[in-house]
Length: 504
Image (cartoon, rainbow, N blue to C red; front, side):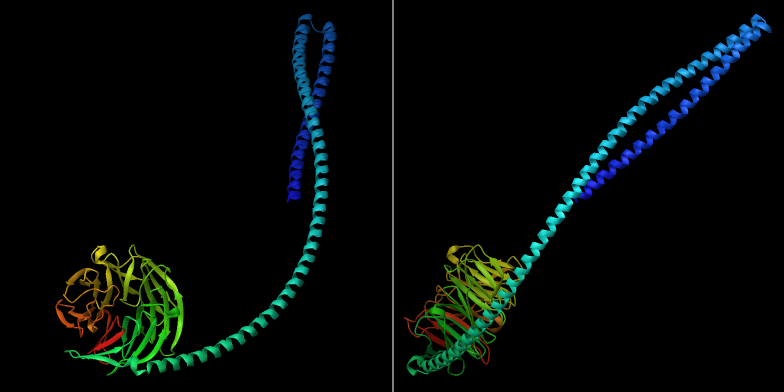
C-alpha cells in the first residue's frame, strides 16, 4: 500500500511538470513570433529611412523645400511610431526573457524533483522487495509452524479419541454397575416399604368417630403430618420426618407406597397430579416423584437455602410452580426455572389457578394472582397488616380463600377483585402451617384448626355448613384438608399426631 501511494505521488508530480513544460513551450513560441515582428519592424524602419533619404535627395532636385519638409515630417512621425512599437516590442521581449528564465528555473527544479522522486521510487521498490522477501520468509515459517501444529493436533485428536473411548468404556461399565445396584436398591426399598406398610400395629385403625359424616382415622405417620392431597382414587400425605405415603382411597384407606425425602427433610407441601407427586420441603428443595414407576424423577434446590418454603403445585406433567419466604414465585419447566416473579413480602402458601397461573398468600395478608406470561400480578386483594398474614390459600373456579393469622377465613371473587366473605367461628384457630380446600364446584370450603376441628363453610352464603368436631378435647391440631370427587366426595385431613382421617 505504501509503494502504491508513492507511485501515485510520483505520477501526480510528473503530470504537473509536464503541464509546466507545455507552458514554457508556449512562451518560447510566443517569444519567437515577437522576435519575427521586431525584425519586420526594423526592416520597415530601414526601408522608410532609405525612402526618407531618397526623398530628401529628390526634394533637393524635384520638390520644393516645403513639400519635402512636409514629407519628411510625416516620415519622422511614422518613424517615431515605429520606434515606440519597437520599444514596446523590446520591453515585451525582456518580459518574455524573464518569464523564460523563471520557467527554465522551474523546469530545472522539476528535473531535480523528478530525479529525487526517481531515487525515492527506487528506494521504495527496494523496500517493497525486501518486505516481499520478509513476507515470503514469514509465510514459509508460518506454513512450517502450521504443519507442525496440524501434526500435533492430529496426534492430540488421536490421543483424545483413545482417551474418550477409554472414558466411555469406564462410564458404560460404571453406569451398568450403578444401574444394577439401583435396580437392586429399588427392589430392596420396595420390599422394605411393602413390609413396613403391612405392619398391623402401625397402620391399623386407631379410632372411629361417629358423626353425620362417616370418619375413619388411621395412624399415617410416626411424626406430625404436615399436608395431604387427594387425586381421584389416590391420596398422598407427608410428615415432618420427610416420609411421604401414597394411599389407595377406598372403603378403608390402604397405604400403597412410601417415599422418603432427601436427607429426611421435613415436608412443607404436597401436590398429586398426572401420576406425579411434587414435594416441597421446608429446606426449600423440590422433589418430583413418579407414582407409577415409584422413583424420584428430579431433585434440586428451588429457593434460597435460608428461606422457608411456602409451597409448590403441579401445573402439568412437566411444569410446576413454587414460592418461598424469600418472596420469589418461580415457574418451572422440565426442572428449569423459566420465569421468576418477585414480591415485596414473603410468600407463605401457593395454589394453582390455571395452566400458567397461580395464587399466592403473603405475610402481609395479601393474596396475589401471578401469570407466567406477564411481569406483573393479575390481582392483588386482601388486608395489609402483618398480624393478618396468610397461613393458607386455595382457589376453585373464580373464588379464592385465604386463612389468615387473625383466625379469619377470607373469600375473594377473582372477577370482581374484592372480598365477598370474612368468615369467623369459635372452633376456627389458624395453625401456623396448613392447607385449605374447596369442595368440587366451589360449593364449600373447609378450613383446618389448631383446636382439632375442621370447619366447613358454604362458599356462596358464608354460612357455617358443619363442624367436623374432634373426638376429644385434647385432639391434635389439624394441619391440612383436601377434597376429592371421584369416585365419591371425600374430605381428607391429617393432624399433628400423624393421623389420617377420611370424611364422607
